[in-house]
Image (cartoon, rainbow, N blue to C red; front, side, top):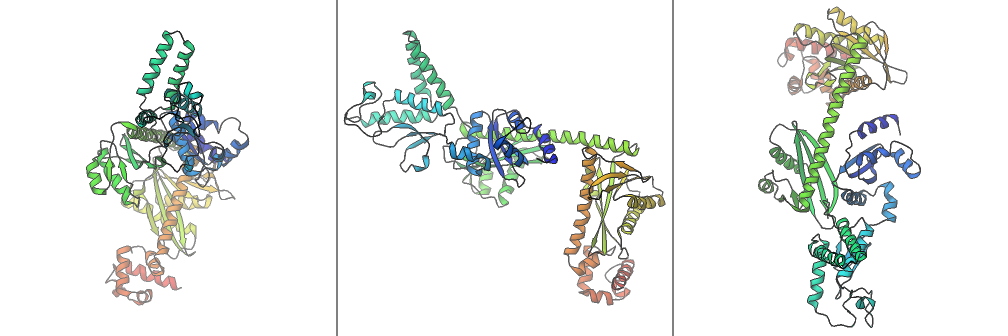
Length: 594
């Protein structure tokens, strides 16, 4: 695992909550390569990256580039979720679980004389047997089936015998092979069993408690202890699950959590009872959260998201209005499994927002640290505003410049500026001279806000040129260059006195200066590409100062070709553009031909 990845994962690990849930490991391509579960997400995920690992775990850790997680309310729910995600993504490192381990269901057969049993291969079933599960605790599931078979004398044999068996004599079978039984009795038993397995434990637990009390009064403590164990098995096996894989639910569920002008949104996609994915987003919140959510959901489906059969929303959202607009069923729930799923989504939204707040807090601390470090290195009393410059050229000849502004190491995109550079400019240093002079001459003339630091991409030559321009305008602004090594990696700072200052690569300052360097390069190169993509004629016109989109359109409308613009007199050009711009355009075109 590369050092950069280790550092990123280490930072992310500190934000993982100590809650149950499912975690998903991802490779460099963003594919999920492993899905796991944990009682304590923080402790479990951290264990992969601390301490010694071997074998397949070592291979997994080597492939990990990132991870994600979904919080649940219990370990059981995290396991059910783990199974769901494995079914969806078929992760590379979950092959053993997929091949060697399947979780059981309880089956109540749809036969004349029904049976209750544990099954694993549910896909082979062609009849209409009732299936309940899956059950992660296999032992408890088996004990539940045994308990129900003892309480309800269902058929036990695979095939009917010629005579009654031992189960009949024990009172655990009604003797289906010999006796003529009332269908209502069978229907009553299967109805109670179905109700119990769906979560209605009252009938069975009441009977067990009565039998347990009777056994205790009779001092049959062994039987009482056995019945107590059955009650405990019921609690483990049939605990209410917020993620119910048994029902064929098909819906999208929206939930949110709002705090400090942020709206954290969670979308769960439920298909055939499985959580097939989730979508999370955090937005700046300015209005009432319920209104913003209504708008968000509408836009969500306008972005080519297919409408499901049903949308589940919290009660604060106007479901009638949303349903009428989208022409789909919109529901909310105040109780039951889906209400619990809404609560689970809200918990995930809250965790996401808390993680963002922690990231913001950490970013503020790192920015303050970087700011103080740079102030100390350069001997500055104040460092609030940095203006950074870079140049790019078109076709190896036509230069453009870009300036980005960072206030306290945060980008201020409203202050970014683009510069068209004279065609006479044939090199980077001359291009830098022109851009810096034009920028800071205007700062002087228009009394614009001055930066505390000018940052240029380059070494001693670039810093010397920048200092020459700033000194000529008598502006007291510090200058620093970002010098690259022979491998084209930024390694040192060059200050105004052309002194080299080492820049530790593990410092916050290096990270923030690198971000500025990348941003100004991106901005300049994007401007260069934008002009290039407009075509040859538009590119040429865009290189002339004073000609923007409107004047370019007027020139093209009147003259239609570059040849006719070149042949036009100043008087003819003045019909479309001001005289000074017409003169610049004519000179530019003459230089273009030379």
